[in-house]
Image (cartoon, rainbow, N blue to C red; front, top):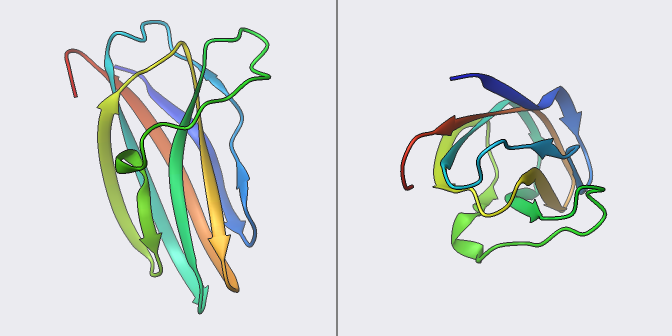
Length: 114
């Protein structure tokens, strides 16, 4: 299984999203590894997967909020596994307050259901 780099290590200070990644088999599940190595500020970040069926990746859909990494406000390592819902995937994040979080996101496809 290949490890996909969704977001290279960088400081996040505002809301945004990663580039889209093509998932060869959306029938599998995907494990997302979120690594926040440094945190300053008094805000929070919510990370969530987004999905696209569109090869141009111009249309993105957010899933149920149960797939979000909710209200992270400290440096930590978290993994989440959920079903791959479409052929294209990215992560988005929403910053509330003042935050500087050094973050890296990786993903890995898995056989079977989430």
